[in-house]
Length: 540
Image (cartoon, rainbow, N blue to C red; front, side):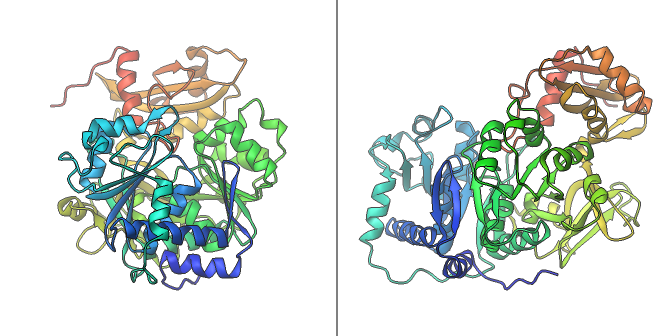
């Protein structure tokens, strides 16, 4: 069992920096910081934030790709008790405005450009006063914008100016911060409605990170590569804070590129990594995969069995651990133990985190299910969020009166207490009365020697209500027909699970992917209606 003393992020950083001052803490895009340098940089930015009037409990946002500055800002805000609001770099103007307004953001730290996106131009469209003096009527609480880069409007402050203001700020002691204070406001993906701001405390995230790091055997002097975006909890809790609580070195990239990821892991002699199906498939199917003999031995994945087995066999990650979680649970609920039975780990079984309660409940009857039966995963304990910001009704819907978080996910438990995530309840579709989980069909498609990546959704059918439809990307240099791939499935799946429709595509990017490299099923389904000439089934 992992032991954890309740503490704040600043206390954790101070302890690790004192014991591992000269060890590398971060390597991002070729730039490096030791733990002592990280600690000193964090204090400089914290004083700069105080000089701009940021106080304990204020909300500050950050919008840029993974970078040293992202981490320093996050840790600096935490050290003065401010709440960081990560902004997804894929947000459009309306989404960014909603996020900043809904979260009552007082200061925004933003890159002038990222991946050919002109963020300053986007922000000008939201806040015309950026070229004069803030605040703007559209965002009346946003008093300061700090820009990383050369394009600094007259109403904003450059990053160097922030540091200069901090150096001149006469404050010897930073505000007192407590473990139960909110550390992060994580906006959910919002596939069917506007996103909700999940409030996570220092204790939520740090304890989750420490427990997870122990599960996938991350220790001091290990080198952990993760390209998970920092605006996602897999990037903050399971990457940044997992490395911090372990005194390991985190290596990352501004955005995920498979060739760069492979080269970095090889050249930096990385011992650990993490990712989902899409990320690992992109790396293992890249033409340069064989050029970089990796030295991985541990890490965590959120993958189906076929992809997981390939990660073990082709990438050498014998200590592979499966992970399941959601933002509202800080985010991890369960993770395999690195020394558990390998076949169990590959199959997706994971142990619930220490001192967290999990039960499975039938979504229709609300009866708690015994081992071996599927049900909605419900979670209770220290990892559950403090709630959705300014959304009491939605919070009450998510967390019931007894403190159980209703995840909306289906799972199953074995008799030894392992939990296996099956699918999102909303992703399950019914074919003539039979439930079909997309992951079951996707795993069979991934076993086909010509298929690089597959995604499955349910689409309307006048007789069966819904039927499976699949989109696949082929491996380089091969050809196949939809009929051939459907025939493969017929030989391996029950009839109701066999895709009725199948389309071969070059990429999922134009259809819709999240910044964490997940295909957006709702957008894929909308595209399928167009591609296959379908109409929504009328509901009586």
